[in-house]
Image (cartoon, rainbow, N blue to C red; front, side, top):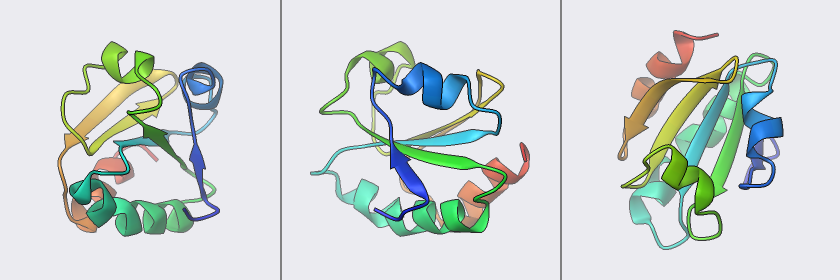
Length: 108
């Protein structure tokens, strides 16, 4: 995982994501998920590109069940974008980098 991407858990989600002073893109994934692995380089690139304007987090759904259940995560990969503690965007499935950038650009 790139240095610009951090891991978030059920225990740290509120502090790291909901109380963040910049938008946060959260990648819900699992180790066994091939589409999750496919989008990982794009997510890491976005973290590097928008580092000062956006935080990028990853949450393993096998290790954290409370937060994915709260936000209705039914398929992975799922990207959720939070701003000012509110869910602003949802993107389910493997999408190209450009699609993810469009989603992020609306909120930074």
